[in-house]
Structures are given as C-alpha cells and as structure tokens.
Image (cartoon, rainbow, N blue to C red):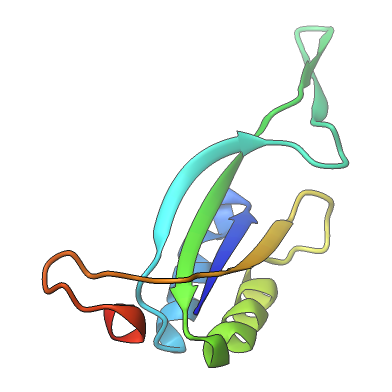
Length: 112
C-alpha cells in the first residue's frame, strides 16, 4: 500500500474530488494548509503599497491506495489539478506498512 499526499490549489479541490470518484477512489482526507515553494510567495499591491504574502493557501489531500492503483490516482491528480502555472503543487508517495479499520479491526488492504 502507498500513501499519496498531494498539495494542490484550493480552487481545484472539487474538480479533483469528482475525478477521483470517477476512478472509484473514494477515501481521502482533506486539510487546508499554507505553504510556499520555489515561487517564495507573491507580491501584491494595496492602496499604493506593496506587500509580500510568503505563505499561500493550499489544500493537502491524503489518500491511501493499493500499490496497483498508485499510477492511476497520480495521473488523475496531475490531469485535474494542473494549470501549467507556478504553484500547482506537488505529489508525494510513501509506503504504508499497515492500515487498521477501527470500526471492524480489519487490517491491510481490506481496511483501505
């Protein structure tokens, strides 16, 4: 099993959720976060004064999938979250040793 963490633009969340449901990937956790990458934030003007916003709002998705589902989920995330502009986000993939469903005590892929 793998954990996929995707950091995306908040305005892309609904489109990404719909695309994941279309490929029958239903379980995910969503967290509103702030961060920055290479762009180091943005500079904006307000009433003639410039100010820098160095932590931008992003949305973090956490998804646990079977190994054979990783490529399809990642491809779906890239296709639906991508704008082509700086700040589209990142995807991180890590191994998951064990999953336990609290309600039933099921373990492993049955619990995903």
